[in-house]
Figure 1: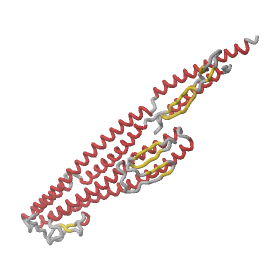
Figure 2: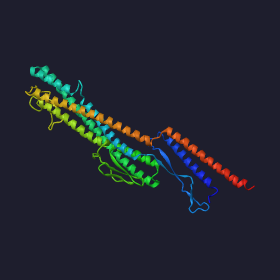
Figure 3: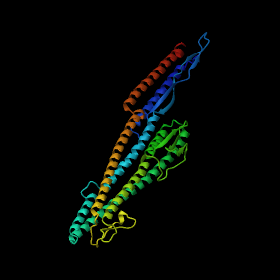
Figure 4: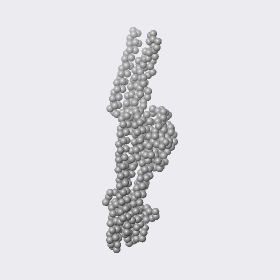
Length: 411
């Protein structure tokens, strides 16, 4: 026999479910602009049914007992989350490449009317004047000034490369420290989530934000366990976070395969290579002018470095027989270097634009799932409000029935 107050219990449960749904909708609306917040939804389920025996029946019938709130969960798509992390690593790496190549282009300073190419041309022209009139003091003086200008410009460019390397090294150290800090925080959040339960939505959001920040620094593999914790490793399988423990860390200079840290590592190699290419051009051009020989224009230390290059200001300069040919070879090498840098810079620009576009497209798809739509939430609010009103009306109707049964039938 069904309890006389069964209807009140049904209505109470309906009110509770509707109230929880309204509160969750309000929570979503309040956090519409909160970074990292994931839309939450109320998961309803039918309450266990009640066996009711009808008169003369062999088997019981099932009488529903309303609905219950099973859980309040975040709306996430793990596939899109993983895709976003991969795109974030790629975009961060290309961004570093683009920025570095832009700085290298500034350091190389071409094309320019005051760059190294023009300085080399001017020096070659000054040599021609000396060759035409070796005894001309003015020609010798102009040649010396052109040589000094070339030397100062080459050394300034070399220092610019050194500054880029120093800045990248500082960025590398900071990024590695940042990554290790994220790993520690993720392990701590794993512990908090394990203690409070896998549906700790605010903690889960905070952890996902840290994982996304970490993925921008380096590519990672993320495995979600049944107990709600994340295991994180590098792409080559090195464990970083296992359960509630940080089981690994990243070292400066360690190959991580991408992200900002990987991009910096590759950028350092690129800067070193082009600084070496510049030094080779300068040395070749100096050798064309009889480097370290009697009466030569240039002198340097051994081994050659751009910073050790100097001009023999007291010498009477004598043009070498192969000067023009050797100088042109060095100038050709410099033009090739400028072209190579330009091509690499354009590749970096295209790569950064493409990866950023892919990241934005993935994020838009992800936000369509997990983001907050005020229009949708307002529609849900109206729906749950009507559900609450209907449940309240049901309680009122049940109350009237009980009033009739208890008060009026007793008369």
